[in-house]
Image (cartoon, rainbow over all chains, first blue to last red; front, side, top):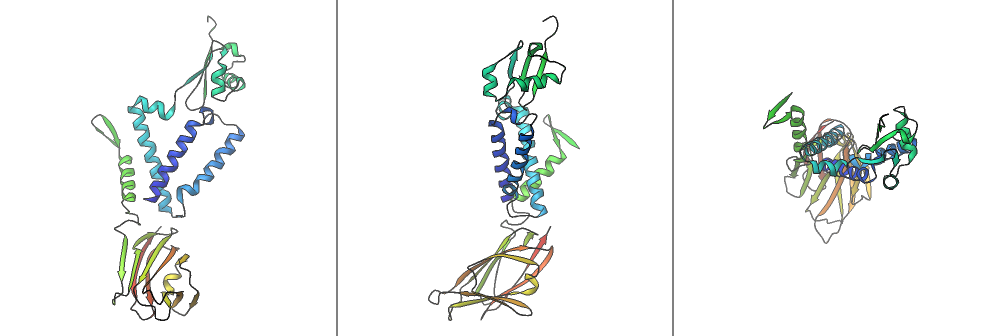
Length: 149
Length: 153
């Protein structure tokens, strides 16, 4: 029972932490962010398994975590409200080539992050972007401006 | 493998996951009411609670209670060496003031209160091997308790 409780509590805590830390935390990570993820993974290890180092305990914890993930996916599939609550919603951050500075500040991203995402699609300048959207997974989607726009 | 029930696709794996979680919650892997056992000595002076089913590398507690008056103010508890060679003792509460070993057992000596009969001693142990562990625990002047613990990985 303790194994299941630990898995539930740690999963819920991590979900809340990453949900409220902002979308970019989940997106393409920098070296610093990668180090942070590694440290977090190491820190929660003992919280998950406690002093029980048995194989069975590890399997119970893993099965519980996967079970929680399945249940949440089912809930999200059947409830739009739950989906918004758990995943968040996409945020438009550039409109018609103009960055929306207040939203950039709220999401803790800057124009360099947007241009970095744009360059992966062969775009070089902000005015080539029709719309940029910060997705719930932290990625930035770029919709290029068409010539006729 | 999946089934459709009321328009929902139910995967066989989900059922397995549910069974594992429910079994663990009910203590089916140890630590639950069905596997936490009690034993007493024939003369009813010594009582023990232990996990009959437990896993390797996970701590568990042997909770010993005695109602025997401590005439000398001390309590001597003997555990068989064959059992102790397969477990690690993490802590003992209260701490013994003396521990000494013989060929077939190890004795733990505790200071008690002669005016208050009975004493409670907890051994936190971690099994280090799998299989059936045969244990015997006894106090001076009382008949021993013999018990078994099945340890799985």
